Image (cartoon, rainbow, N blue to C red; front, side, top):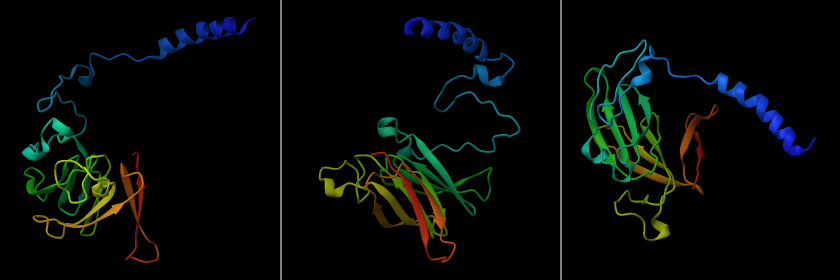
Length: 195
């Protein structure tokens, strides 16, 4: 039997089995007919309810440059740190039904995954347009390019303060933090870059 015939025989056996195993939308499942939308998309929830839906700050809600794309959330005490491709937002959620905007920090990251430890916020940064100084307008000189992790002091959530950029060779798409088991003053950070 030739190789082509064997491949055809295997395909003839596998294709009907794989097709039969596919699942199709169930009309009773509320997720199967959700309407699309950016600010008014359909909603289906099970065992949870929406407590609040607070619009983003205008600086973080443009379709230009993916600033409308939130990347991740970090939680610390009564605050949520909302990462965004254009920077981050700090929300006071001590009253979950009425989150209060504390501050927005514009600082292009092209990713923006946040982590919080104490009063330090770590934000992943990768991409060609990230500047060391958090300025707008892109990077013209490679020495001004930031790819790695940005660190901010958020002890005053109304006025976060930039601390330092930590450059990595491939940027930071995401990261994980690990306190040293031997010294509380040491914090290890693992980054996964993709530049």
